[in-house]
Length: 118
Image (cartoon, rainbow, N blue to C red; front, side, top):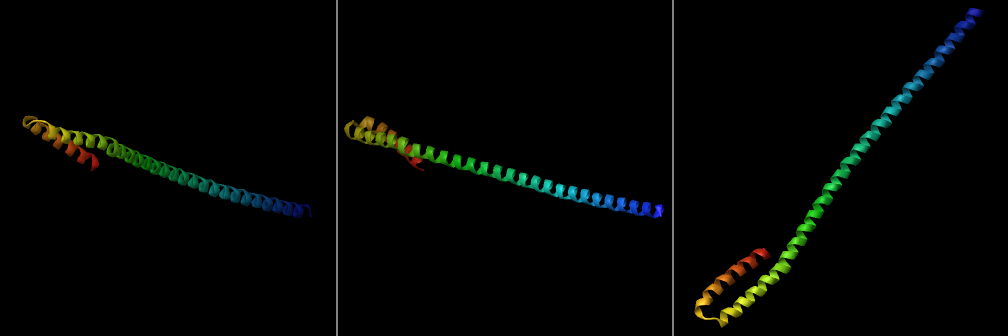
């Protein structure tokens, strides 16, 4: 009778050990899946963050170029227009020798103004 109880006790111990082993294996499997999922999410977040940084840098560059072009068009364009007007006034007042030089200067200022506008 003692042997039969020992065999049943050994069977229970083996069953409990198997249940514990299955539980531990299942626990590690679930743990690894969650860990891998978190790693993949972290990589995806990093990729989105880097993409967002790249987009912001492009927007900043575009805004800077818009500001520079605005400054060129408005400020330098106005100065060149004033210089062109003054040269027109001078060409009406001066003698014939200086008129050719004034016309050349007017052409240079006009082409510079056209370049700034474009």
